[in-house]
Amino acid sequence: FGFVTKFNFLPILIIPFFVVRKMKEKVIYVATFIVSSIFFFLPVHDKFSYFRSFITSIIKHDGLYGGGSQQVFNLDVFWQNTILILQQNTAFSLILILTLVAIVMLLLNPVNRNLHRKELLYLISMILATLIGIIITAKHFKDYYIIPIITITGFSTYTLFLITRTYLKSGYARLVFI
Image (cartoon, rainbow, N blue to C red; front, top):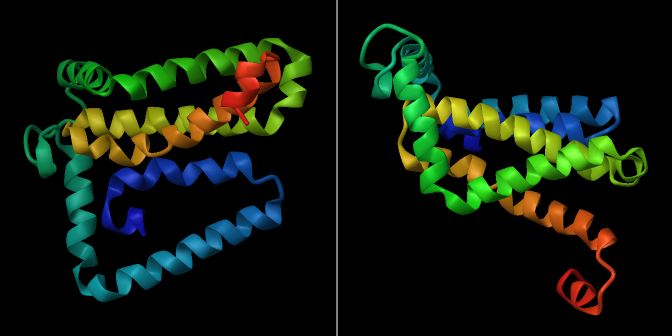
């Protein structure tokens, strides 16, 4: 439903392709997405051409709501907006950094990589979704445009806790990460 109402939900759609292992389940996911998108688009199907031209304008122009100069990216504005996203969302930025560190640590250690294969795939999908979300948001920045991506940081934090729990052996760590 999120994708049908807001284009910024698009990056979240890639996560199941990393987490779901079986091809049959991926096909079911795609089919379910297509059918549900059609269902949710039905009430506004006669306005779909407006939606398509709106999205095309957003992609082709560097201003808000499809306005501004006809250029895909204004790199100066893009980098300023990327910095703003990271500065204004401190907890999000911290979790993003911790996620990157966890991915590197798991990739460098084959034993832990195999032990936490599922978690590693989720964290990689989270990073990819986050990067795509930041790119989409930084192009036309409004702080609330990043909210769909921020919502997945809760799952990432939980995944980081699961990974960390196996490394911590103290009683306090067991109490906190039960």
